[in-house]
Image 1 (cartoon, rainbow, N blue to C red):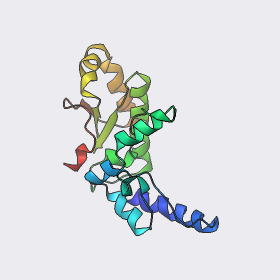
Image 2: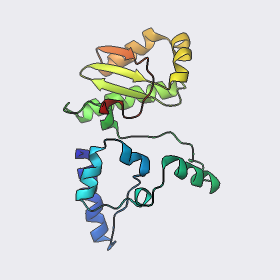
Image 3: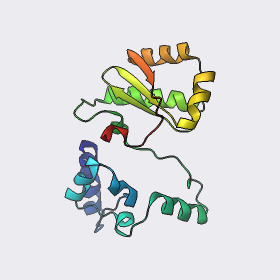
Image 4: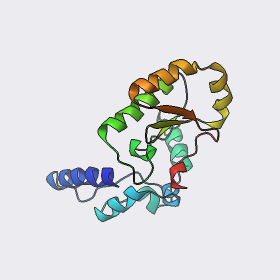
Length: 170
């Protein structure tokens, strides 16, 4: 919620300065089914969500983007890094950088999609369930643990349930 408040402080300022009537976002119908504290901040700032208003789902948006030839039609979701932290835990720029570097490292190793959840000093890696077996069989865990340790994590684990969007909302 804090990140969205900060974002909308700037977008609202810019919209007034540039004489734009509205600020729009990309919230869609599927987003409304999940707990998203930032949506309250958007609502308070008067931001309009046309995709949600006209009931466009993520799949609808992908289908339309593909039909229009947009090269990013199948790009994986990129939720805010603050979503990697449990509610009520302190989020600092240093901790955000740790998570970002950890995820970048894993993506450079060839993973299609990854989340590194930060719980205290523990990093919990979530990857798509269909990539778990390959990950376990082919990764150098000593190197991975050392890299994560150098970032500041005291413990690194792999979530055997796999990547589940919104898992921290449970």
